[in-house]
Image (tube, rainbow, N blue to C red; front, side):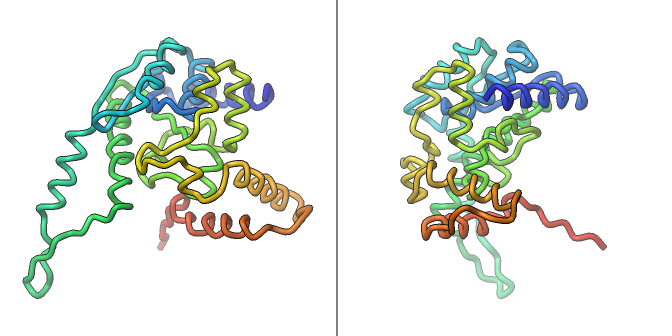
Length: 256
């Protein structure tokens, strides 16, 4: 992990110097990803240049973990509760109508899945508003495992100016967190999205270990053109998720 750590630290220093970024804004969830990214930022550009933003939607059961991260890293932080913004936004959609070409009015049915993506988009709006106001950059916290299957919200938590862990699998993020001496209970905390009430693995139907094993196999295939063993049935299912998530990582621009 030492080599990866040094590479990321140098990359961050170079990025902030080239972009004239005064510092970084990062959403602190209390999970391993935001904890590791916050630590990398502290080590690269200094704790005085980091602003953590806690954004509960009403009451957050594990909010104390977020405070623990900020206290442990000794960084500045602010709390912006998104409950009122969330409720009002949904209310305005609920009372709005679609006017059809025939002159009829219809309600807009907000699906459960669409509803879960509202909070991440509100949070990213807050991060960018704060960042632009203070001259900071927004740091992303999505790891390679999540990105591989599109486990994130487009224009929500997947949006950022720079993401130090985008090339690290979940397993590698944990190893890096341990290497940097971060609190064990935060780095090895069961990953959950905080939206569905389930752990990530319960939502996936497979484990991060299975996902990371596939990613390594896929990397080897890309580099060498061959793999040691055929894809399993589970891995083929994961690869379908990867294909379905293409639109989240690729914005198609048409050139005339």
